[in-house]
Image (cartoon, rainbow, N blue to C red):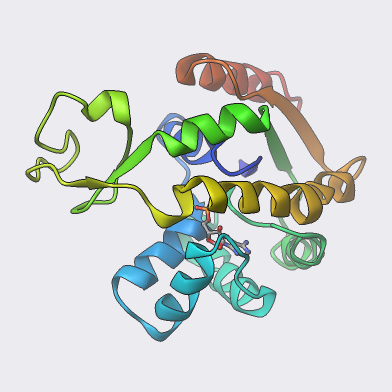
Length: 217
Ligand code: AMP
């Protein structure tokens, strides 16, 4: 199954993609993770991308298109994937549509996770990441613990620059002006499933799996 998980920053795309990855046995391709990994390794791409990500802006299309082309051509993506973070604007949508045709991928499902902006601001400003493994937690989850629940490193958690309120508001503004029109681009052309992203994590996953099960392709 070929899935694009779509929605505003902070709506829970990454969380749901990770769950779906294990339930459907297809890889999670996150362009944000690819860029953060490059930044952590201090590659030329990573260093350039970090400054852009920290400001909440979008990395140039030519860079992103190169990354997505390379990734989707990998063997691990041949039988399906969950694409998270791409396409982010109409130009990227047109490019990936062409790429799908080239790769003979027809049955694409777009999962559109929906949530209110103020809920997103509140969720994201309450997130912290482990300095060691990068895993994200809510402040409440790590309130009373000193070791990371994921990698067990002696807890040192930080707020990602792109989770600071002014940056989040900038990212939401870009989502509304550049990214949301991607749904209009695919409307009537591809299958779009609308999902209520405000429910608890498990309820959102169940909603997604049920809607995917009901698809007749
Ligand atoms: P994410 O983890 O998907 O929220 O992505 C984090 C940051 O990576 C974004 O705020 C952008 O700066 C950058 N990024 C990720 N995917 C893309 C994309 N498709 N186009 C442009 N920039 C991207």
